[in-house]
Structures are given as C-alpha cells and as structure tokens.
Length: 113
Length: 121
Image (cartoon, rainbow over all chains, first blue to last red; front, side, top):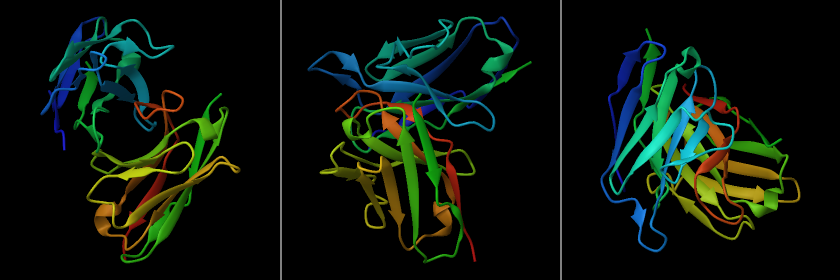
C-alpha cells in the first residue's frame, strides 16, 4: 500500500497569512503514461463531510477559491492557502488515487488564531 | 445538483451484520464508479472499496475484503455496503462517494453526509 504522510498535524495561523502543508507519498504518484500526478486534496470543515479541493495535484475543483493552490510532483506535494480566511478552519487531507488500495494522509488541522 | 444520501447506520452488536444504502440523485448513476470511505472517531480516513459503473467489478481494501461487500442497483440509483461480522474497530462514519470522471475511477468528487455505525455490546 502507498503510505501518505502529512505534516504538520496541526497549525495555527492568523487571517490573511499564507499557510503551507505537506503531503508525502511512499511511492511516486506520477503516472508515466500521461505525466499526471494522481493526488487529491480534501477539506473537511467541523461537522461536515469532506469536500474536494484539488485533484491531479494542482487542478482546482470548480468553485474552489483561487487562494487554494496545489503543487508538487512524484512523492512530494503541497497545499498552499495564499491568504487564509476564517472560513478555512478545517482539516485537510491528501489522498492518492494512483493505485489500489486508495489511501489518505492523516490530515492537517488548520486553526485560526 | 448531485446528492448522495446514506442510511442504515446505527448501534450494532459485535459479530452482527449491517447493510448501508446510499441513494444518488442529480446525475446519471449508471455512468459513474462509486466508492465507500469511512472515517473513525479519531478522524482517520479509510477507503473501503469501489464498484464499477455497471456493477461488474469491485475493488476492496485488503483488510476489509473478507467482511465487506459493495453492490449497486442502477435502476434504483442506489449503492450498498454489506458489512458482516462487525468489530469495534468498524465504528466509524461511513461515506458514499462518487468519482470525478464519468466511466473512470479517480478522485472523490462528491460525498454524502455520512451515516454513523457504532459497534458495541
């Protein structure tokens, strides 16, 4: 199984600040056939279901604010929120859909100071 | 609007069986792979398995393959998860999800609201 490691487990930032969180996979998620990285990011706000933010490592889902930026390739990926808003308080999970069984990271909890 | 509505959760005794359902609307159900994902009280996310759009193929997490069965009824736009011989570690919120791309298995573009399963005597 591909192991997904997210860091940090939690972080607190002030509104307006930039935040980055990391996701590392134990195997490359870059598929040679199409040169795409099979990595998704989800946001889960308190009491809600997860919501897709980013897929194929850097493609923003429709309706997701452009302050959410996915980057990285191979085994190292980053989710950046360019200017955190109060409503971004949530848990963020990365997930690989490169190979079965699909696996998730343990999440990064974002707190707003 | 895509909607996924799970049901069937509740309190169940260890060793029992339980069947979860997920009714889909807002899209052509028979065009999409579907998955079940669970989240433990400690917030660990675990993919359980998926099923091809026509129901002809399933994949499972190896640790769950022998106890969980995914099926679908495209005429009813409904996804199912049959759980057998449940254990305390199966206590979780179970989510029904739809893949992002028609005909393909990929990211989880839509999630239901979840149904809580609690395994306890």
